[in-house]
Image (cartoon, rainbow, N blue to C red; front, side):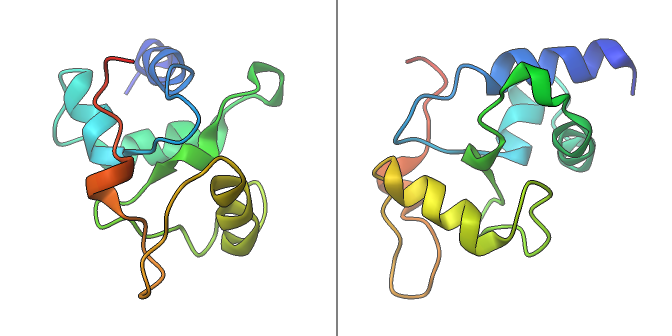
Length: 105
């Protein structure tokens, strides 16, 4: 994928509001590349710090956190999400029914 795709990923991720999460696959699909979830992950891993993106709001499709969250541990990612009101289920996954971003707000 091109730098242009990464830029589109960054633009979309910047719009995820507090209290909501999006999945790698959801972002890829919203950008017209439904089979590019892994590339969205690479974009997140490569995100320049100066963009101040809410990368912690991007999670896997089942509401799980990345064990190798690039900006800290998965525990730190969970801390950030909980501080924004994200609800976790007893199994440690995000309640996607309540917290998944609709892409509109």
